[in-house]
Length: 183
Image (cartoon, rainbow, N blue to C red; front, side, top):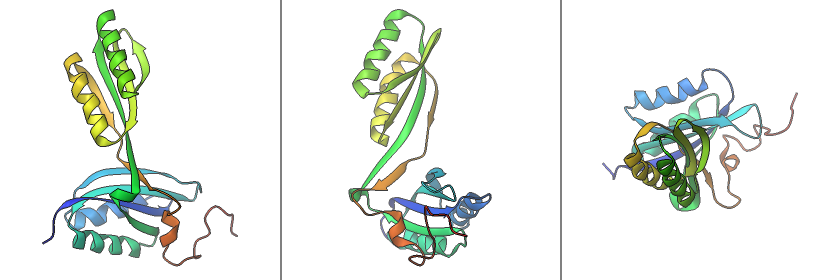
């Protein structure tokens, strides 16, 4: 068995009900826990992009990617190279801020991390930050001293650097016409 590590898969699928369930069932049937999952529409409203992070060895991730490609609503599956891709996630954190001095300290920390204050209410501040997992964890760690009320993180999303893209590896080049209305 090879070295277990986090792999990031980008999966282009039909934007319709039940597709996410089909994709996630494939992982559960194989006994893999999805570490991170993010889904959203693409530039075409008919397609969605799923970004999945899973811990597996190279052989098993290749097997799962090939099985994903066989699913009918899947157009493309691409294993993203961490050295050639950009990965980000959104963090929102609500922190207790009962007095002015604590509020000012939290605002200074937000500025250092380039986080945004997205809500101010009596007794709390809510911050939002887009960054890699390490940066988001760093902000959370520092804010723990102020008593975190609630935290939410999206799954990671990722794009390849340069001109390479997920459309380079469709099932059959030209089978799907992205971004154009086809009758």
